[in-house]
Image (cartoon, rainbow, N blue to C red; front, side, top):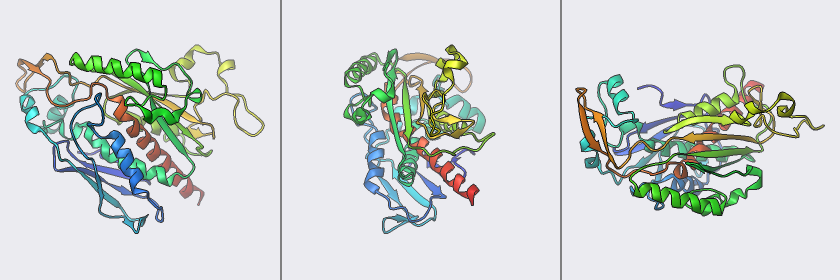
Length: 354
């Protein structure tokens, strides 16, 4: 299997399966001398881990990261950073019913056809549990990106949309509720809605908005490695993501060019920011902001019809511990992937200038 490494200079390779002994990764290209706050890394993992509230999967995993290399006396050495997160609460028997059949809208069928074999326990390598390793790498990237602030939050669940500009929100409130929506009133409505969906044995999708502040001018490598293209790739590599838009996004098609153009101030900043902080594939110093759409989790605790390995129609029912809505736990994943992209392009910028 290829495709397990992300990045050019700041590179991350992940390994492991949902129900294996451990998941983990190797970070290559991280500069030396960065003083790491290991507690901050663990805090980001805690934001992603299962079992943290009533509206997420109840799998109980401490998700404690153990580092094996690349760190000495609290600082990065410049050598590969190896780490692992041990799986402690697998219930593989919950997946015995899909050993010989395929769950709709999962990777089961295509993995089996592509590789001729699959780990059916929780989806194996295709499980979103792999993203915990990305959070570790992203948390380290955040500490490398001095001065850059990355804030992600839930802006929509189902039809419930937060119709406020991010500049009008107190983003410090994002972690004050289980949904991770910075508007307390909307967060309560979203939480109640997710709970009602869970009672039905069903799932619902949502949108995460991410904002990166204080990004310097010049990140991005046209023509094929534009900054927004790499951010799009990073987000679309996350499990369950179905869409990515930055700046004015799809709403921008409703505007005339004379209204959509970001007029300059004398210092090079712009009066508006429909460009989303990126022009010509290069960061322009304004806030970078984008939306990431997540589909409803494919596993529903209801009966359904599917096919087995021989193509026979069979009846099945979803089992196991799953999120009724993935977006609350995906917030730190979106932040992590954003940080990795910005760290990689920052290092690439340094290399080119030399």
